[in-house]
Image 1 (cartoon, helix red, strand yellow):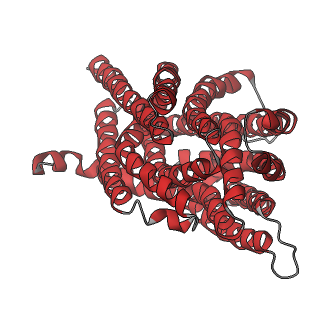
Image 2: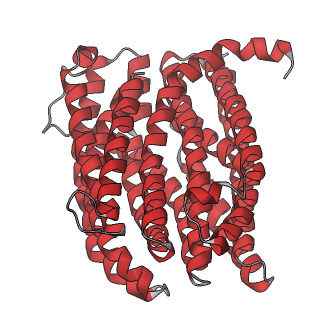
Image 3: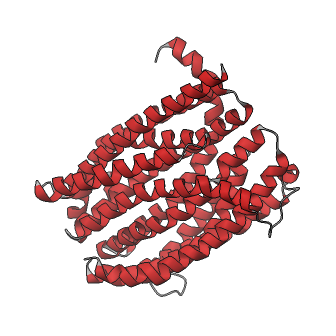
Length: 454
């Protein structure tokens, strides 16, 4: 990067990173829950139960992202209202979002309990893997409700620029989750070994505590007093609910199209065997860890974009967004190199099964290449979400993953004989497509905003 280009964006790098780093920490916290589950089960319960974690996470995430997408709608709306200094609107938006998210949490719990648990026997998976999956999925499904409460207050605080507290709560919660998980999975201090069911219980406890602490922080902190004057826990109105759904529903679909593509890949890989499925879980777990860092950068881009939109500072909006692209490209290049160089070492964090490690090492090399595309596409989604542009990006994600990525992966994997590697090649090309199209959309929309302001 030339010195003149660096100086042009230097102030935006600083502002974005100050806002992004705590969000990144919080996002890593969410990912650490799944990562810890995989490591604990892989080390103490074996390959079959690790495959069960892969299957459950694949099915669970397809439902969970519906709720996460709805909850994410609050952040750009709060950022825009705060940019206009409309503090009363912030409290009203929080009231509506809390009610919507709690109802959504109960709905999603019912969807898993009465839907996913009934069909899991009929998707071509190993009988042993399915047997271990059911109790784990049952505990995770109930954890959606406290997670949605946590998300409500987290997205509210982050929309106002208070990002550190959610990170700290996530960090402490993850320590509790890991400690309880090891105790229950391995069977310590008088507990019988529970295997994969133990990490389901530890995750539920973690999310209950996080929801309680985050809610108390927002409702009691003096930082939010001015914003909560119009907050009423039972207040809901049609206008603000529609605002939330107009952003939240398309964002939820964006996540569904992306996550379901990776979940669909896991299910397809599961028809090959338990070892490839366990290897996929290891590689996707590590890739998802770095994705969460990129997602944190994207979330800060959403907040800054919303602030600048509310202030009608469109040149700053564009420069801040481009700075976010620069940051995520630099980070993802670093992680890509790490994945390639350490591809044979990282799988040992999860398992000692040599066959699983061999397959996972190949997948991590592929993951190294799609890191760059994964990071830039999520930043593109974040910036566009900040300006309220969610419908066309939703179509782009559907096109990229389900029209291009999964079909191409299936053809390469089964018709051309590349197996699990071929499925990952297809996913990589889907991410590349999304990255290019979302960047084009960002350029088109933000240049138009600048032009109209002039």
